[in-house]
Image (cartoon, rainbow, N blue to C red; front, side, top):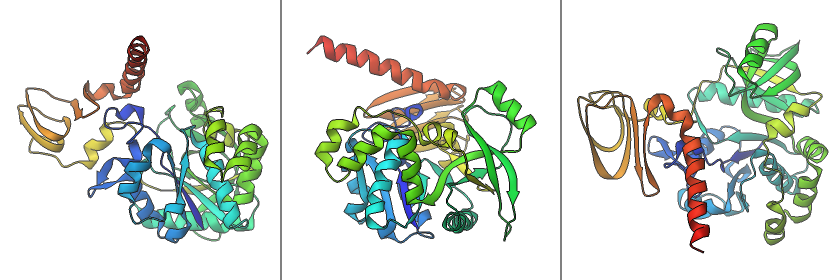
Length: 353
C-alpha cells in the first residue's frame, strides 16, 4: 500500500507552540519525537518507506528537512500554501498515480497519537483488502462517545458479511461536524461511527471522486503537479476545503470499518496534559518549572525557567513566537485569539509599509 501523510495542518488552537512554519505535526509529543515522526513509524507496518509520501506546505520545508533527514526527498510533496485536505490529497494522489496507477492508497493525518498500534495495523490491512476487492472508498470509523459537534458522523447501513473480527458496513451517509442538536439526533436515531480521518482506496477512485466534486482544482493539479512554479501560480485560487466536506459528504457509496482504535487527539493544549511528564503537584511540564502551591497546570518553555505561585488549571506557553496564558477550560478559544492577533499584525504591517 502507498501511504499519504497529511502534515500541513497549522493547529491554530495550539498557538504559539504551533505556527505555519512549525505546525502541529512538527510538535514533540512522546519519546521526544514529533507527531510526524510517530505517524511515519506507525505506517511502517503497512508500507515500505519508499511508498510513504508526506505532504507539507512550503513554509515547513526547512523544519521538515531537519526532522526527516533520512527520508526520501522525492517523497516529500510540497504545497505552495495550505488549502486544507482536499487539494492536499488530490496532489499526492496524482503523483502516486504516475508511480503506480493500480495502487491502493491510505490517507493518514499526522495530528494524533494512536495507543493500540497492532489493532490500527490490522484495521488498515483489512481496509486495504476491501479496497482491492471493491471500487469504493473505505473509511475507518471509531466507536462514538457522547454527542459532540467536532467530529464527522458516518451513518451506517447494511452490515457486510465479514471474514474476520473487524465489522464493516455499507454507509448510508456522512455528516461533517454537525451542530450539537443534529449530532444528538444522529446518535439517537442512527447507527453511527465517528470519522477517524483515515481513508483507503484505489488511487484511481480517489482521483475520480476529486475530479467530480472539485473539477477546477483537480484539472490544475493534473496540469501542474510536476511543475511547482506553475502550480504555485494557480494554487492560491483553489478552494480551501476539507476532503470530508467536499468529497465524503457527497459520496453516493462508500464502506465503513468499525474499529476500536484508541487515540489521543492533539487538538488543544489539554492533550499535552496526558503526554508530558508530571511533577509532584500534577503539573504537566515541558522545560523547567518551579511551582509553589500550583497544581494541574500545563507549562511549556524550552529556553528559560518559569515560576508560579498559587495558580491552578492554567496553560502557560512561552516560545519565540509569543507567550500564552489561558485557563485550561478556555483552550478552545485560543484560535479566536490567534485570529485577532493576525488581524492586528496585518493592520500594523500595512500601516508601516
